[in-house]
Length: 280
Image (cartoon, rainbow, N blue to C red; front, side, top):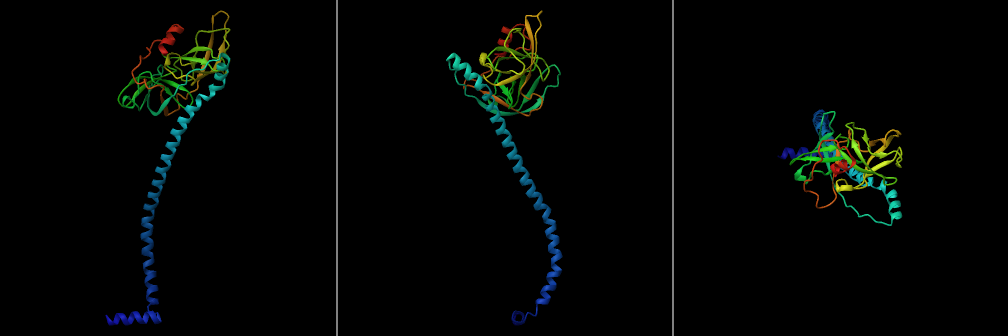
């Protein structure tokens, strides 16, 4: 004990142990480096995983927010034309308050003549038969089957689907029929002298209460008039990205929605009245 005190005192005054201390530090340094190198990958991996998880969460939140905002902005496209018509008619239409919920597509019908998808929302999420389905660009279709955890939707391009629409420019009403092709709708029963042009935007008319009014449905891409026929041949391209989207929006326009509605039969209608009834 006394020897230790003497050695410490001498080292403090004359630094006799500095050389020994320096030598020991040189010996220990490689060991410290090896220990640090062995733990560095673990720290780096932990930090990377934490950063990746945070970024993925932020991306998902931003994507959901963008989808919701785009869906709300859809109706702004129709406001100018609607306001002109309302001022002219001195009539004010009722306001429609919409509630939406994001769902994901989990399966797609591979039948080339059928256009159906399966989403990950069901009756536990208050999904109901006939509920409208949108994406950030326009109307996609409606629910035709519900389960507790998933639902099946019929897209507007299915041959059995008919959507009541109107030309946004002048309010001309029509029926947009599915063709089975993912990028084409037909508008039957349009007179040859109707005021309709290539590039006109078709929006939901709201007739029948199935689809909320004012949402984009399609854009007119082809008009062919034949004097031998009473109606023009009119084609349109859906505004919704029916083949390249993963997130969709379910829409509720009133508290009463939630009770099952009649599902349109899978038979193509033969006249516009039948088409309207099936789409309502």
